[in-house]
Amino acid sequence: MTRPAARLDRIAPFRVMEVLARARSLEAQGRSVIHLEIGEPDFPTADGIVQAGVRALAAGRTSYLPALGLDALREAIAASYPAAHRPDPSRIVVTPGASGALLLALGALVNPGDGVLLSDPGYPCNRHFVRLFEGDPRPVPVGPETNYQASAEQLRSRWTDRTVAALVASPANPTGTMVARGEMARIARTVSALGGALVVDEIYHGLTYGIDAESALALGPDIFVVNSFSKYYGMTGWRIGWLVAPAEYVPALERLAQNLYISVNTPAQYAALAAFEPEVKVELERRRGVFRERRDYLVPALCDLGFGVPASPEGAFYVYADCSRFTDDSEAFAREVLTATGVAITPGIDFGEHAARRHVRFSYANTLENLEEAVRRLKAYLEDRPARP
Image (cartoon, rainbow, N blue to C red; front, side, top):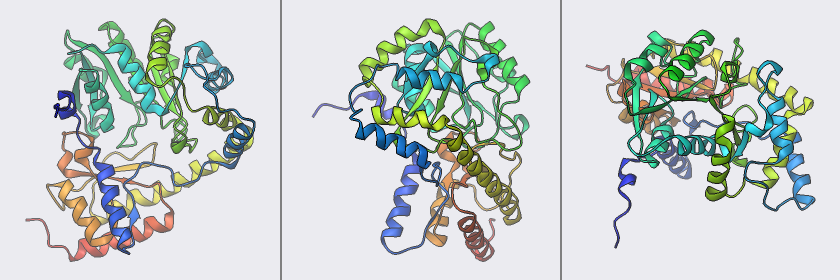
């Protein structure tokens, strides 16, 4: 039998999905499991969006659309940005989720052996996307001293003659932290001066608490900006996102899209149009308030249990917690916690290597009642658990 491609050896498992599989197995055995591992809003898609999708299906809108996306949707996405830095709709590529947008951007930028700088910890799939194109993902270790975000100086100090791009996320997974406006401007200037491309993942825009997230589009037209209908808009399973690209890249991105997936799900594109309707916006903002309430409960509750949270999440729905008081192996700790308490959490090793074995991620994409029950279970378990030597 022919051996699988060597690049597959460099693609690590997505461990949160392994945690989810173990959790589902326990549920199948009759155990009660509280899911704090998965990064998915627990609300159903807003009814206005669902009904728009139903109408599209009923109207027979099931044929291929242009590879760049439905023109009306591209225009609506463009119009969702403030007028001061609103992109031309021709720069917007509708994609199968933010993952599709990242694949297109990296496919257009990365040659074999090229380096891409990424924050560590960071979303695990990003480094694997780089590897898929035979690139070299280069981690930038970050911690609470920089709000778990790579700084312009860190990027400059790690840039080499083979580096072609830097990828930053604000708010970030797994930490929920944001890049300050001034620092994002410094990052953009630094990457441009070094002759590279800046890719900014803004998938959690809309889900910020007490601070407005300004798009990196405000910094110029040469930045790749990724976003999605999955998180704030609650359309995870519809698989639809977008990429705002520099104008000169759009023809190449169109060719890539044509060859990789032809076009994005047609009913989903018509459904996404409704995401910008005022009545839907009211519901999405209500949900943002619920997420904030959950964050404001969970962060101090975890600190009371003995976890460390040196940088409070400003967005998304995650808490990246230091568990070194309890363990030096977060992967084993997460398995142990799931088995003993039925609380599913994600080990830090899923997000990189820097201090990964002393961190775990909690998702608060679950009800406040379930968060309170999870804390009760963890408290009882940690009180009875032998102290770490």
